[in-house]
Image 1: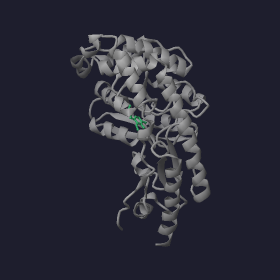
Image 2 (image 1 turned 180 degrees about the vertical axis):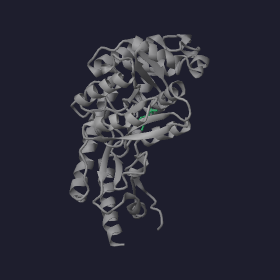
Image 3 (image 1 turned 45 degrees about the vertical axis):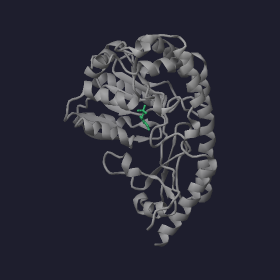
Image 4 (image 1 turned 60 degrees about the vertical axis):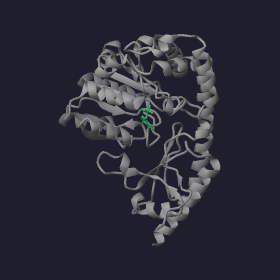
Length: 373
Ligand SMILES: Cc1ncc(COP(=O)(O)O)c(C=O)c1O
């Protein structure tokens, strides 16, 4: 089967180039450099640039609608880098960790890099299943639990308040470190999810990892870790942070200007509007053209987790789909145990409405064809 010259990869979880805020970034860079502060080009503090952490705390207090202080924040180079750092500082090769089943496939790669044994805990429509977590804790003593509480990748699921509270109770009882990846938290389409897990974490056993990748631009490689100051100290004592003098002081300075000028809010609200529209287009197209495929319409984030009718696997349909000019991410990539063969992850972040409609048209055609073969 030949490959199609102009493939629409509706699996791809990246923003369209047209959504990246080049003009705002230029304004913020000019504003930042005009202050003539050479400190931005110097090694910085272990926990990150103080001015940026102050502006970030104000931004998060406003956007999370809860108080966040600079003392709870350490600067990272994005969630991926923060996850790597958490593994370095809180695990040893051979340790067990828990993840949601399914979960973000590239986090699984980071955990593999650190030689960790991964145990999947199933989720349902309210997030991680506490009964399954408690069962797993009978057999394992994990170094941490990795969860994506809001608009999860790949399912779009948001953990309910009750589950968040139950999870925190289990964390307290079992002294279980919870690493929450909050990368999609601020991308709601109108109704905010419950507060990030750090808000529930008086127990000092929660780290909430945030990032500007999804709410501004992935290329800036800037994020934060939110947690209790003594847990954060374990992170800032890392060799990489100490030797490098914190992470990304220059980009932090530009982001501080972006926040202080009100541009970060404008960029984020623009993205939320576009993604809400595109999500509606993708879901409508799926309902119209692929009525046998089931999914829950997301309330935020990037993804639709779609399930094929019984007896069809996404892997057997993919070659026909690709020959017909459309690609998806196979559900099995998101499983720590080879599950979800009938699922595919679709994203509305990368393509505009006409391309999403065309992608679904091609997918419907390919699925009809692959039944026939
Ligand atoms: C759940 C999740 N975590 C982390 C990342 C990567 O985040 P960052 O760009 O901040 O490293 C992604 C990107 O797709 C993601 O989906």
